View 1: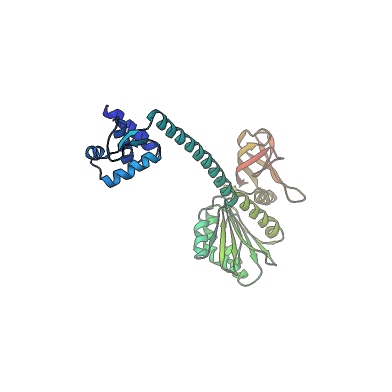
View 2: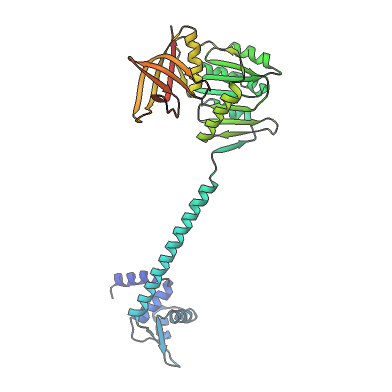
Length: 349
């Protein structure tokens, strides 16, 4: 027999569950019409104690049989049948294993879906430093409603953001240090609106539409939320529960020809109304899509009007794009002509 054929036969036998030593013994018996244990021992140089265990196992599996009393002769037991049976057993075992693994994977997937946790992180240490670090990532807007002592610690960071033309909204609570904080904020220039709320509600900070922080001053921890749907809910809470009931106590001055990026349409509408009231014209650059057909949209124009529905649930800008007036809404806009993914506004005179 060629060594290549022998090696292949050895591989198949091992794949059927035989150990290498068992497969070698079986092949030795298969290549002889009859062979004794001593002959196998001498040819394979295998300890007799181990050999007898192997012979016993091969007989149990129906691969060999023996005859003789004093000097047993071993031979392969109908190899064309016994090997085929082993192959069938292996095939059946693979089928069962495959079915089991399919069910197992399906159960694991269902379990993962059931237990999947949105990206929410609890911060118990170095809250202020973590907050300062995250504030450096702001691209368009930041919404702040924090205890006065925290806002006081963030004054330099707020000034840094304003110098980068970030749109900043701050809600202060009546109480200690508000006068000092307001004096410091009033020295800053940029797109800043500061409001005062008389009754405490909650401590919240939102970065663009990507991250939200909820603070528990009592328990001294913060939650950082990155799940888009929860962040969206936090923005709505900020607007309806904190922003609307609060009173404006300071508005920063935006330099003409300053490009401002907005991530929330309600905030853009609020700012544009003020620009138009002051006699500014407002250039708009919009990247988004047509709401009717989903086709991409990119255009530059001039704001004609800024609208808010009576129930304060719909906000949009009417923009003239080279003679064509289109209504532009924010993320998830449905009734407007354009859903804006990116919105840049430049006030000028």
